[in-house]
Length: 392
Image (cartoon, rainbow, N blue to C red; front, top):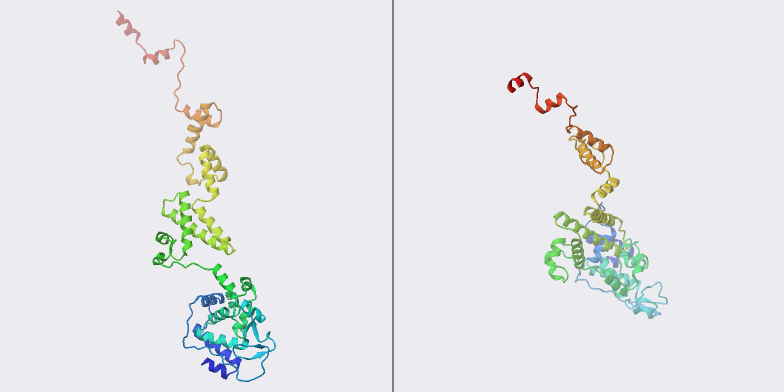
């Protein structure tokens, strides 16, 4: 139906009609809403999707019927010819066209007709049609040029717009020919993701135990990295509880994210901060480990001094102030006693002496031949008359 419209209508009208039909076929309803996929995401999904081939489509571009004088540069498709190539043919950096001044062998008109019929062949996918043409005519196939070529003027096909955009930005950095596409895809290839436990048997490196522990959704090489890092952490540090196990697991996940971000030269500021927070949670930061090592070489008194200098104990609230007098007991019977033993005269020694005086019995002093001394020894006065009677 669309082919008949293209033949019977003007080029502008046919192009507009094609794009409307294509949007309806591909999207169903074109809605702009918050959270909708970006152009880049839409293009990427279209590139990665499996091609849907319409087997009823036949590619057919008729030759021109008008007989005219043949000129220097001839289109191998329709048979028309021109004296110059620049305005009638598209360029390609492929070696296959180097002796044709770098121009492909079909004219721009046939190129566009071929493009539209390829879209029909690929069930409405412009991305698959452009990929097909890139492979055939030696052009690089890259997502940035595809995304940039989505906005097409009504008098210009998307493949024409793509050819202009492929010479800019990231696409140009990736290369110029279909061979560069092959190299780029090889360098940036992704391993298959393990979605279920049943997928493990298809991978040589990954063990079922690792997938159960770290969960599905990672690539084969990712599991090897995660397991290696986890084993390294847990052999160097204590891991006896479930909470410690989870901290080490999260650290490994963050290390994997950092590794991938570093490979692509992405910003790692947030990832670094999260990793530092996880290390602090697990008491694994270098400064924390250094303090633990220092603690083994310090006396108890030295450690108390260090802790008090770095983070002293604050004054307690009134309701918690030395209600059981433990502070006084320590000052008197520990510090005061210690000062008394080593002969230091200070306030603690005096406090100790004052407190001990309360519980010290002083030896009484008596005068010589004192009656009080007699009473203290014998417990009372003697009756002299009774003593005289008993002697008689």
